[in-house]
Image 1 (cartoon, one colour):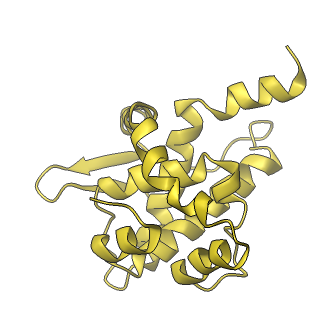
Image 2: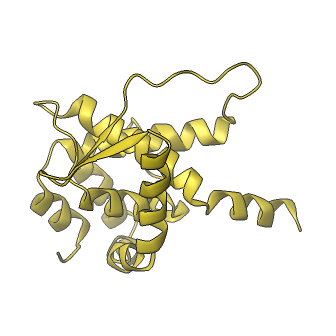
Length: 167
C-alpha cells in the first residue's frame, strides 16, 4: 500500500475523529461566553468539516469567525463545497458516533444526558516522551479548536444557517 493511501486509511479512523472532537469540544468550552459545552449535534457538523480536506483547509487563526470562514467559500466561488456539508454530515453519521463512543470510552469526552451536551475532560495529561503527536495531527487538533471557538459564539440555528444545513 502506498504512503498516501496509508495516510488516508489512518486519517479516516474514529480514533482520529475522537481526538478531533475532543479538541473541538475543548475549543468550544474555553471560548464560550459562559463556559458552556457544545450540544451533541454540533459534533456531527464539526466531524463533517474537519474530516474533509476541502472544508478544513481554510480553518485558521487568520479568520476572525464562522462568518469569515463561510465568506471564504463565497469569495473563491467554491460555494458548492459549502453546500456539500449537509451530505457530509449524513454520510459520516456512523463515523461521528464511533468517534464519540471512543472518546467517551477513553475518558476524553462525557455526555450530560439531561442537557444533551458533550463535555471534555480537562486538563488532559501531556503525552510521554516518544508518544508526541505528529505535526500534521497537532495542526488538525488546532483546527478543531478554532472551529470550536467559532461555533461557541453562535447558537445552533445560526450555525446551521451559516453552513446551509437543514435541521
